[in-house]
Length: 420
Image (cartoon, rainbow, N blue to C red; front, side):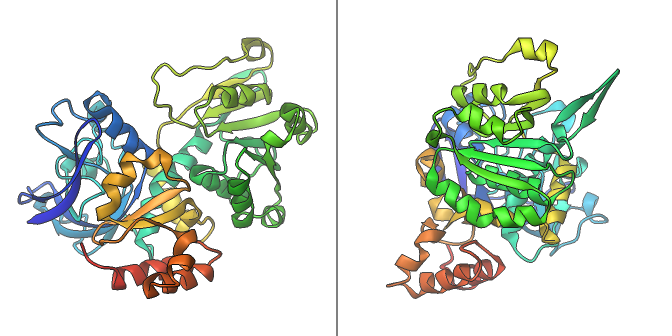
């Protein structure tokens, strides 16, 4: 069968084209993709091409479909998996399949499996590793953003603290402790704030820093100080550029003892070094941001490592359990990853979106892979709606939902947007 897909051929060489999918094998599954959210990791794979660890060396001859944050419907199940998976069921996917030690992953490594396509063939190893997950949500976009949310959840679970007198680590952030989220008013930071405020173990203090007043203001509108207080969390939004001595001010919010957990959401040397300076005794620094530069480095205080038990951890993606937790929390309404999404578009916009991703402001770019529509910021719907009834309706729908993407908005797009 034919499908339209965005494929990577090499460095900065992305192409939207129609390709022929072969018949599935007995150990494969044919699926329809409905939504995919664009990840900065796709940009990194595009600018690195075959030098990227997950992209095959022969990508020029055997291009791969990009996109790994996708959700859709199972269309046809190969004989091997017919007892486990059902045709017509919704699914989301954990792309970090870790099959036999390989780094191969959907969205990076496969000719017929990636999120920016109308249809894909899921290879055997996805099912072998239990990375094809049943999805029970009403909206497909929640299944797409469950992958980035699982990365956040995985980072929280990877935090650790020491236990006095024994060589045992207590995993997770410190319950009732002080948590700093640095450079965290972006999409992933919003997810991290949401999780910290609404999921146990909760800290008692959460401090969110950034230097963009617009992003900080929007973050405070989405996850309010009042809501955090109701959940037993003292939440502060801080523009560090407005403080002559930002370190001293941030430390004052902990009573001077320093932070138990610090997450760094930007691969920027001064931010990393500030994060280190803010650690209290037994403080754990999570370097969440993935740098493009393989030689990226920053200073770390090793006196404090020795005498104050400070330490560092980093994760790249979540695991299947994190993905399941993400889906469960979203289904139950405990968290709302829709706060990550700022733009919506069709498959026709993927090439330009990925190639220019660092230059496009806002958060997650959500793609409906069977639609032909421009990439538009949700904040711009009202202005476009003055002349376009389609965006007028979307503006009204999102306006009733605090300016966030929602189930009703998705249903409207699926029913009314132009097919590609």
